[in-house]
Figure 1 (cartoon, helix red, strand yellow):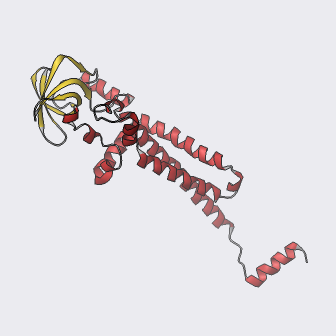
Figure 2 (cartoon, one colour):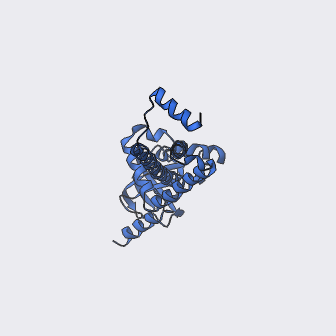
Figure 3 (spheres, helix red, strand yellow):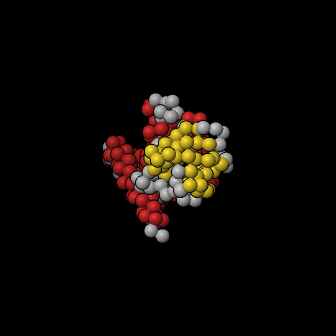
Length: 247
């Protein structure tokens, strides 16, 4: 008995029903659609990661009494890194379960997913999606601020020389003004002529800022450096700043 005859005999005995071609087609469509979704989701996560890293203040670890390594661990967006790894694992599984998926080497699938996520994530970040999504998640998920770098918490350390908030009144041009920090507490800020004002900070009511300096009393703070609250390394933020200054 030939192999084909044995196969047909087994099919007849076990009453095996052939799977219709359209079912295979739908399965492949579903798998590849999921794969595309995974790449898009990976791109969004990559944009969030780029935003978090770019918006982290790498130079303030000294104020917090931490080493560069410890501070890096503190601000590393490890939650998003884990999510990216999970997305890549899903993409790998999906490709392996498509028709002909076994032909692709593991490194091609993995690096292809990483490259696709990085490319798409960079595009999303350049369009400002990273900051927007980060802000929306922060509003929708109360526990989000505890899942990684908490910018407001780091910059509400007046005893360590770090303070932030919104300017609510100007007392004497830029040398003295009042801010309300992110806990709602008002502070009187004094800055001498040698204080460094970042080029992208406007000394006006409503401006959100970060301040490096020294706490004098429970509500008085001397500033040695004033920075914008948002990082303006993002081209979109620079554009927004330009539009604000030309009004």
